[in-house]
Length: 140
Image (cartoon, rainbow, N blue to C red; front, side, top):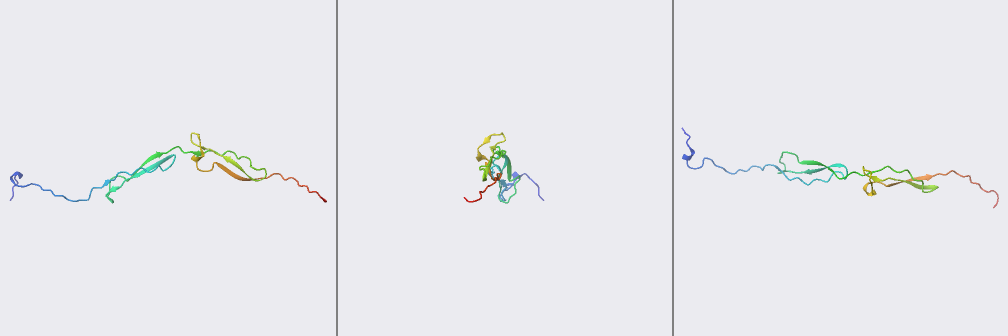
């Protein structure tokens, strides 16, 4: 039969410790840099990622983060002007029409901000009323 007594009556330690090895706790890496904005003008989004370490471990939370971005107001092509007159009076010539690149606030910009044609050319055949042709008869 045993009787519990104060531990101070015994020599040595009442408890012992030894190191043990377990897998490391999973943790998130730092966030990567934000991606470029998904659009060059207007409303877009950016993405950044992180990894759960060690690889294959399960971390709490998501590995992706999004945010909205807006680089600038989008320019757009204004209405085409009316067609000009034909460049020739007979045969095949060209006529043209123009348009301006603008912003929502209606400021005219240089053509390099929009993609597409500034001048649209159209081939056109001009027909004129036929005039009677008189041939002289007899000898010259």
